[in-house]
Structure formats: structure tokens, C-alpha cells
Length: 341
Length: 147
Image (tube, rainbow over all chains, first blue to last red):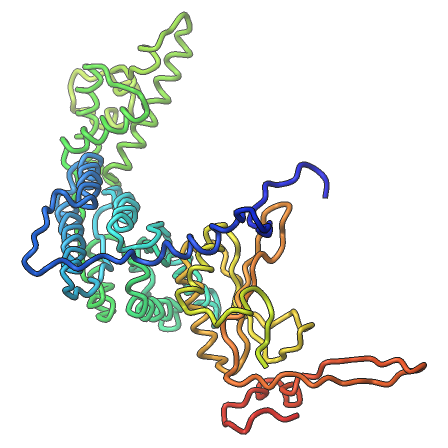
């Protein structure tokens, strides 16, 4: 082999008289899995909850969670409950009390764009912080990833996905597509059975989250009672209100280092109100798309105008960029609105 | 006679926690973990049967241990080993391979000497277990393998 030698990675044998370079490889890393021996607390001892190092880190994470997600009050409440329960369980263990691991399989129902996937990602990190999950990675799948195309294809495929999700969160988007009652030879049922068995047997290894629209999830659970009973947490994601959507837009623009001029802000509020009444409104996702289109229009305006421009020009989205949207054109009853397109 | 092949084979049998820790080390480095089994203990038998496909893209060692357990249930009287393949450029080789399960009794090997021309002697190893057809070499019924 030519070229520079790759850095040594655990090949070298330790030489006598030298600390072995890979001495850490086997022993310490295996050692980290062992829980450090913690002396049991006396029954009459008390613990200051706020001083627990873990509690502090946790409350920081929960605050961040609250800041980053606008609205979603029922979701936040449930996440706080779960976090509190896991923390209390740890404290109970310090007194030598038994506490069984709670089952955390969940069902997220809500309209598109209400943040189901985003919350699932954060939940993985949060549960890892709480020591419930070892890795906390999110594996997001749909029917295609679980159900095979021919006899005997489904089981290995489903198991493969489940193995990838072990130690983390498995999010099954639009889970009701797994069950197709109109086709009795559909392999979806097989995937559901494997899923059920794995969820039960490996409860401490992964958290399964089913996501989808509320009404169709209801039908799915009614036809799969075993699934419904194995899922302890049913969390409903409410639609965002106009004010919440505006806050979300502000957050998104802030993250992209853009800002709306005062007039554009008012225009965008009108835009969101109009858009909400239209069909196929996908909450935060529609807002993101609208912002992307406004950026396009702003860029076109800047390039067309030419001349010297500075930082404020690049970051500010003007009223005209907002008003140029088709949504305004579709509402001709708004008197006095310039109808660009 | 205890078969010593692969890493750790001079140590006492690894516990499930130790196996998990080794697997986690491999998984953290992005190596693909595979489970293999055989009932032919000959040292030159390097290509064992695969238990499922190698596990690419797993994040947690629990998935590997899950397969090891499943293989143990299916083949309690076989040798089972775990190997991890490092696919990174410049290495591209099996990075670790160790036995995680072995039959209850291992009868060992017979040494055959073959007289050849000019007083040469050729040696070969014959596993006592290999006298039986594959699949029933390490019988569970207690009669033990044939010679």
C-alpha cells in the first residue's frame, strides 16, 4: 500500500515498559457501561431536587425544548411529566426502592406540519439525557421500509429496521398504512405482528412512536387492539393559531438571518390568515415554504434593481415580496390590495 | 478440548455484558457486525455459515446481542462467533472476531500421521466431531460424537 500511513487505530501491541497505546480500548470503554456503585441513601435522608446535577441539566434541556417549540402545550406537558417520572425513578433507586421501567411507546396524532417528527428527534436526545435510551438516535420510517414485496420478505426487512433503531427512537410515519383491511393478503399485518412482539420484548431498548392523522389512527387502533394497548402515551398535536404561526415564522427567519420590515410583517400576518383558510394548509411546513418563496422574490428584486447594496438590503424582506404571493390574488375581495399576480 | 480461535479465546467465556461492550466498541467505530456459526471445528475452516446479513447502520450493541441470542436458541450445539468488518479505506478487513458460544462438550482432535515416500510423515488433524454428518455433530442426547 502506498501513500501516507493511516493513523494507528488499535493495531499496536503494547510494548513492555511502555503504557500500551490501546490499553484504553478494551478496558475503560467496556467499563463505562458499568453503573458506578452508588451508596444507598438512608431512609430518612433527604435530597435537594434542584441540586441534582442531572436535574439541572434536564431542566436546561426542557427549557430549551419550550423555547424552541411554539405552542404545543399538551406535548410539552406530557414531555415534562415523562421527564419528571424518570427523574423520580432514579431518586427512588437511590433509596433502594424498586421502580420498573415505564413503557414509553407513543402515538403522535395531528395535522401535517405540527412538528411530530421534530419533537420525536428532540425526544430521543432528551430520553438519552435521562438515561432511558443509550443512543437516542431517530430512525424515521414509513410503510415502504417495513413491509416487503413478496412472501418472506417482510420479517427480515422489519427486523432490520428495528435493529437499526435499537438504543433510540423508531418513528413510523403514517402508521395506519401498515394495515390495509381491503387486501387480506397484504404483508402489512405481518409487519405489525413483528413490531408488536419486538416492542414488548425489547421495551428497554427502543421507543416506538407512531405518527399520523388522528381519525385514521383511530381506525388503525380499532382494528389492531394489541397495538393500542401497548402504547401508553397518546399525544395530540394541536393546530397552530395565527399568533403561534407568526412566532414560528419569526423564529425561522431569525435562524436564516432574515427579517421582515414593519409593513411586511403586517402583510405576512394577512398572508398567513388567508393561507390558513385555504385547503392543504400544512401549518409550520406551509410557513417554511412561504418564507422560502419570499426569499426567492427578494433575491429577484435585488438582482433586478442592481446598484450598490448593503447588509440591511440582504437581510430585509419588504412588503412587496410578501404581497406578490398568489394567496393575495386568490382573495380579490380584499379591496385596495395590489394584485401582482 | 477447548477450541481457541479468534480474539479472547484464551480467556474464560465472555458474559453477555462483555459481549455487548465489545460489540458497542465495534459499532461505535462503524464496523459492520456479523454473527456466524458452524459445527466444523477444524482450524482451517474459516468460512462459517452466516446468521442473517451483517448488520450495517446499527447504533446500539443491543441489536447485535439480540441476533447472538437468536442464533444460540436456533443452534445451541454449534460454535457461534461474532465478527466485525472495518470497511474504511486502507483497512478493509475483519477487525475483530471472537467466539461467543460453544457446544457443551468439545471432544477435540485426533492427530493422523501418514507415511509418505522417503520416511516422510504428513500430519493432519481430524476433529472427532467431524465423524458425524453436519448438523448432528455435537448431539444433545448425551451419547457424544462418534469418532
